[in-house]
Every structure is written in structure tokens, then in C-alpha cells.
Image 1: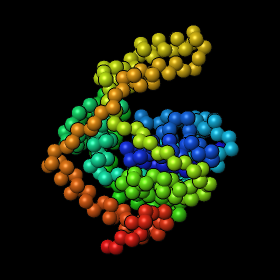
Image 2 (image 1 turned 45 degrees about the vertical axis):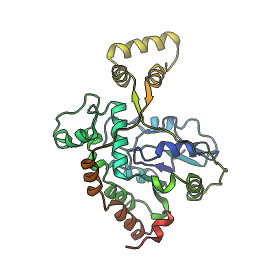
Image 3 (image 1 turned 90 degrees about the horizontal axis):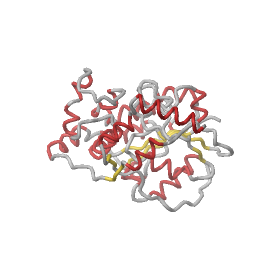
Image 4 (image 1 turned 90 degrees about the vertical axis):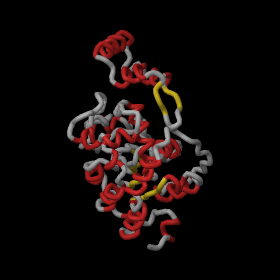
Length: 306
């Protein structure tokens, strides 16, 4: 079994949705843990699998599927992942999903709060803390790698996309912005069938997946995010008594402690600053895709002249 399809991010750009949509196809399989992050060797604390054997074990359920996928969303941002993936399988197909940066940053920050990587509730304040955090200051206790809080770099899609274009053949790369597929997901689904060289199974249902979340109890969120040593020891004893490998208690508590939320709007000043900072990114990425002769691009991209 060799993974031959990678949805590499960015985070909060529709990756979870497309793992769900594509994962129901009879010829596609994803790992039991959606985001192994095995190839992101430069980012600490994200890896579910830290050895080839553990990575392979996440695909134990694969039988006859021809497309074996990996949905690790930090692979796009990682400096190491693309090169590692190419060494692992140079024939792999790469799907890059992007999003307008202001919406992306708001959503990413909210998810970071939910996972515990972030503890500053305002994206504007968190953004302003970036220089100090990169010096090792004001880092939340549950954050295992400050790179995960480098908001300016996270939203710099141009160098991230170029890294992929410089590594993989253009015919193995597909890039889409969220607004290009959100209104017509069925059309994009059929394009992906062609990209992956598999038969369309006729899927017509594309529900919204993975909206914004928050903890009902911040204390319980911290406990389930990083259980105290005594809790971990107790869980180990209970597993031994019951003769089971996993209790799944943490995931059940996290589910009960989760509520849907609306992400707060940012100030006009901050919104304008972000839009100004990244105003050329989409055009630059379009130019890159055309320069590298990537065939799998949105129709509007083909028709755009600069």
C-alpha cells in the first residue's frame, strides 16, 4: 500500500469536507486518522504517526481501493513535507485548497483556540503577538510549535504553492480556492474524478462539514486537550482492567463539550490591513499556475489576462 493522493491544505480551506466527500467513493480510501502529518517533519506536535510502520498501520482497512489518500492540512505550510512526499512517492497527485486570507485567518485562529494551541481570543491581538512569540515569548502552554501561531507566514500561500510547483510535475497538481468550488461542488467533484483517473460514482450530496467550534467549558477543553498525568495513568489502568486498547473517553468528552459558534468579525482597520498585505497573492498564484502549465486549474483562471 502506497499513498498516492495528498490533500495538503491549507487548514480551514475545505480539506475536511473533501476528505468526507471523496472518502465515500468506493475507489478512494483515507487513513483511520485523517491527518497523520507523517511527512511534516519540521512541525512538532502534529504527527499521529512518527514512523513508517505507524503510518502504514493507519491504512489497515484498505482493500481494493486504487486511490489512497492523506488529508494532512499542514503539509502545504511545512517546509519539509513536500520534499518528503516526493521522495516517498514521486507519482502522487497533490490537491491544494486555498481561501481568501482574511476568512482563512479568522477561521484558523478560531480552530487554534479550540484545539488549545492558541489562548488569545482576539485574532488581532494574536497577530500582533507574532514577533514576540517567534522570540519564544507569550507561547500558550498547549502549543507544541510556535510555527503554528505564525499567522503572517501561515497566510502566505504564494511560496507554499511554489514549493509544490517546484517539486511535482504540473499534471499531478490541482489548485482550487474555496469560492471556486463552494457554489458548485458537484462540478469540482467530477473534475477530481478525472484528476484522480477514477470513475464518477454519481455523488450529488455535498453538505457543509466542520463549521466553527468552541468549548462549552474551557477547563474541560484543556483537560481533554492535554490530560494531566494522573488522568492518563487512570485511563491506562482502566484499559488494562477492561482488556481494551482505547476507551475513546477523550473524544466523547470533546464532542459533548463542543458547540457551534459564529466567528467574530474583525475591525475595519485590521480587515483592510490583511486585504492590503495579501492583495496580489491570488493573481500571483494564477500566474504561477499558468507559467508552470498546470492543466488542473479553474476555468476562470484560464480566461484571466494580466
